[in-house]
Amino acid sequence: MQQSNGYIIIFTVITTIIIGGALSFTSQVLGPAQKRSIELDTKSQILKAVMEIKEGDDVLGIYDQRIKSLVVDYNGNEITTNAKGAPIVAEEVNILKNYKKSAEDREYPVFMFMSESNPDEVESYILPIYGAGLWDKIWGFVALDKSLQSIQGVVFDHKGETPGLGARISDKEVQDRFKNKKIYDQGGSLVSVSMLKGEKGEPLGDHHVDGLSGATLTAKGVNDMLLRYLGSYQAYFKKINPDLVK
Amino acid sequence: MSTETLEQPVVKKETEALLSKRRKKIISDPLNDDNPITIQVLGICSALAVTVKMEPTLIMSIAVVFVIVFANLIISLIRNLIPTRVRIIVQLAVIASLVTLVSEVLKAYNYEMYKVLGAFVGLIITNCIVMGRLEAFAMGNKPYDSLLDGLGSGFGYAWIILAVAFARELFGSGSVFDFKVFEAIGWETFPKNGLMVDSIGAFMVLGVIIWIQRTKTGYVEH
Image (tube, rainbow over all chains, first blue to last red; front, top):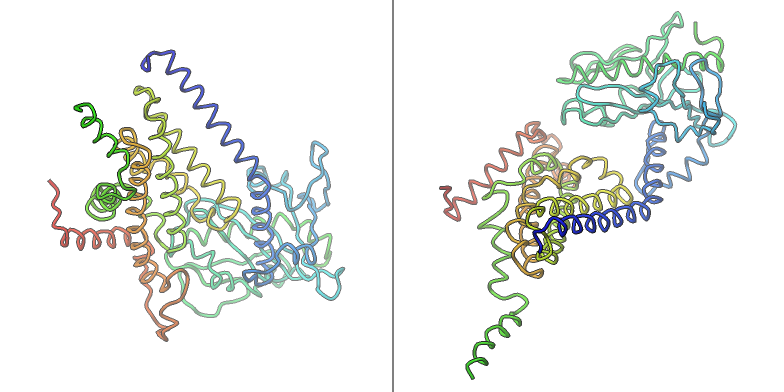
């Protein structure tokens, strides 16, 4: 009886229903907790671009207190609703999905880190960046000071760069190299900051940081990502600080 | 009279001690003499991929032990209902559901580890150890024995990958569970070994473990 086709069909149908039901139940139960984890992760990454986050810090509290956010388009105009008329929240903009569109069609979130003493004064602008490393996608946030001239801090993350080589972009020591570097040259044109080939440990100029030995292609990915995204925010920068961008 | 004497051994079997000699062997065999990684050489891919540091390795071990124990138990409970022609699919469905469960729980309560382990938790589905135990043991044994067998195989896998991770993190990153061991004892200039961070390091450590183990047990492959 157990080998008959009828039995097999009934058995598989019942198994499928039980397993499917159990899994959708789990997904329903865990959904809110997962959403919170993702939110916490995004917000702590944003904050890490400008400050140190220790374990046990009230990330959500600090975020609510210090960060104001908005979304701009390629022309630097603030947008509040998407094409379908639904409201856009900067924290919920999916950078990956936007990365796949052409630069002109993307939504660009801006996270403003406000001064602790004066909640209306911007201390730094934190921008998401996204690109391709050697093996897979790389992403992060770059924080610019209020004059938009120099980098206050960066965070990078990656999906599959080589451990010990390209994966070092997520090390604090490598990210600290970007601090206080300038993104505009003397004439006011955007040159961004780039990693050099090789790792010499020597002090470098305003627009260069020491490279990653053995990970030239990952470094190149980082350079492209920074230049492209800083470029896409130029129109917005010009609106905040008309003297800045040529 | 004769029927009574015939029935007695059956009753005796029913009340076999919770941890009888036979059952202890079910647990202890996979820990050493029949270890899934070092003797059967199964589950090598994840042993290489997740053992750079101790913490993700520990989470991975817990995940595998959970999946293998419950998959063994569930399959053993329904072993007489499963039609033989679709048994592999049923086994896979049970494993995949348990793995999805683990992955979803990690995503909800330990997002950091979810990001680190990512695909590798999902790949427990294809871990030959789990399917191997279902097909070889749970399909033909009682639930409690299958549970013990799952525990044995799970811990057999766990202690090996934890040992590999210990060596790799210690020599590759100079730390254990992210605690900087060498800095703590005052050796700040400890030269980190980049090879240990790469998968090649795992092969070498695993090779050394197998070597030591086979020297001790005298196991030879035929």
